[in-house]
Image 1 (cartoon, rainbow, N blue to C red):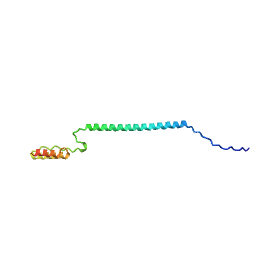
Image 2 (spheres, one colour):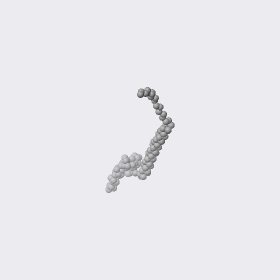
Image 3 (tube, rainbow, N blue to C red):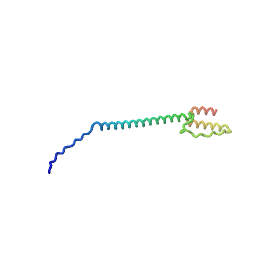
Length: 121
C-alpha cells in the first residue's frame, strides 16, 4: 500500500542555440537598416528643400530692379514743387531737394557742394 517516493530530479531544459539567435539577428539588422534608410531619406529631403528655398531667393532677388531702393529703406516720395514765378524760390526748392538727396544717401557731401555752387552762381 505504501510506496516509497522517488527522489525528484531537476529537469534539464535544453534551449536551441542556432535558429532563434539567427532570427533575432536578422530582425534586428533589418530594423537597423530600415531606420538608417529613413534617416537618410529625411536628410536628403531636407537638403533638397533648402536648395529649393535658396533658388527661389535668388530668383526673387533677380526679379527686383537694381535701381530701386530696397523696400525697407524706401523713403516717402515728395511731390515735385510747382515752378515759382520768382527765381529765388526756385533755387531754394532745388537746394531743399539736394539736401534731401544727401540725407537719403544718394549724394555725397562733395557732390552736394558742387551742385549748390552751380545753383548759386
